[in-house]
Image (tube, rainbow, N blue to C red):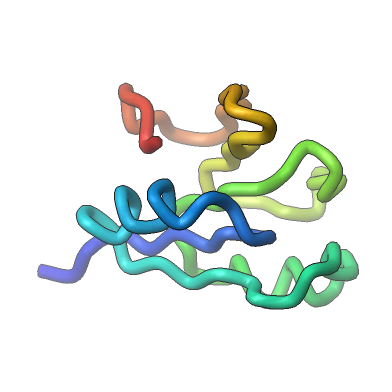
Length: 90
């Protein structure tokens, strides 16, 4: 059985990436820039969830995956869309 997949839109602390990798197949945008809407749409296609920064500007065009806003400055804010996993990922 394949594991759920997660796309991380920007670099977040490595410990958080490692925690996600323990349970999910993870792909990370290694570029230090926000992706264009078209790039983001392509990257999240087929993913179970997206971890984004609040500044990434996730729009209604990103349909399907569960969307989380990521950790910044030691805090965590979650935005849930779609089906829920019922627990914190990070």
